[in-house]
Amino acid sequence: MLKGKEHWLILGALGLAVILALVLRAFPEASLTSFLVEGCRFLGELFKLALQMLIVPLIVTSVIAGIASLGGMEGFGRLGGKTFGFYALSSLLAIIVGLILVNLTKPGLEDGKPNQVIAKAFDDSQETAGESARMKIDMAMGDSERKATDFRDLFRKMFPKNVFAAATDNGQLLGVITFALLFGIAITRLPTAQGENLAATFQGLNDAMIIITKWVMALAPIGIFSLIVPVIFDTGLELFAKMGRYFATVVGALAVHFFVTLPLLLFFLGRVNPLKHLGAMKTALLMAFSTSSSSATLPVTLRNVQDNAGVSKRTASFTLPLGATVNMDGTALYECVAVIFVAQVMGISLGFGEQFVIVISALLTRVGVAGIPSASLVAILLILKSSGIPNAEAAAFALLAVDRPLDMCRTAVNVFGDSCAAVVVARSEGEDLPRLAR
Ligand code: ASP
Image 1 (cartoon, rainbow, N blue to C red):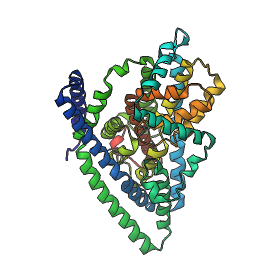
Image 2: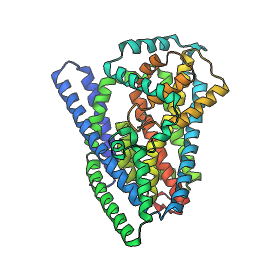
Image 3: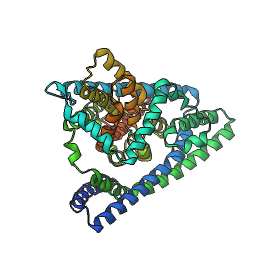
């Protein structure tokens, strides 16, 4: 194996991918270009599929084995309370940072007036959008219509009618986790010999899944290279210039949460060295950045948190699968900034009360956003529509067109937020974590 050097290889692969993609963009017509780009696209797809293949068996076995070792409802309730408490706190802080920055930089205004260039870009994006963008927005519109009238859907997701069907659907991991949690608790209620046998079986299954995860992770440099080449080739770097202030606001706010807020929480609540934790999470962060999917990254997050940060299996297997599903600091922050940006472009001035509603909506909807690329679009549409902001659909097309680089950044923040929760909860449960010592 690569023994601690893998992040350098991954970083190198990332740099090479950017260079290759920019060179290929200079020769768009060459047949070698399409051969290389399509080849990378296919390899990247295979790598992501391999990661996704691990998710359900890994979550089920690690949650069941982890909970079975918790010793019944008592430990479970305490751990659950702390985990959800930390998730609510860190997401709220993330949203507040986004809210402050977007009100300071006002990316949707030009000389104090709604930016007409961006307003026109909204309409243009709607006209020039490709088929796949149209399908995405149509689906999101359908969803948001339904969800707008029914917030209870978030809770329905917890109890899927058919747990096997939920396991085959990317967006339904929450139901799978509920089932695995209940199953793990049930094991602790069985007669001793029976319970121990079952717990050992799930532990064995989980250990086997971890071995497969390590095999897939060994391919990360190639996988990430293949994922990045087509992204840069398709979008180019000019994207960063378009809607520049909006990009800077989102990335700046994400950076504050990533480099200031979460490290402070780690330092004061977790009493650990934030830099050491950042180092421990390098591979997962690069993976999140390249795949734009916190679910696909989950196998790597679980490994980094346990093997590098030293968090126990018991804590990691409870906090991380839940976090990948219900806790998204970067997404919540992004939703808030995006909605206020669109309101500014549309010339709607939002008062304190209205912004407060947006904060609460971002906090609630982040629970329902799936850990897959561009998933927050559904929540943004929902908030735009429920806040009565016009032209929501056109704005969604424009946001989708420039979404990928922002998605990469916010997914890394989502994954880092989950890993910080695992560390803080582990410390509060009396775990030492010497590898993260201050
Ligand atoms: N791509 C994000 C994630 O997987 C979700 C989103 O904000 O779209 O965490």
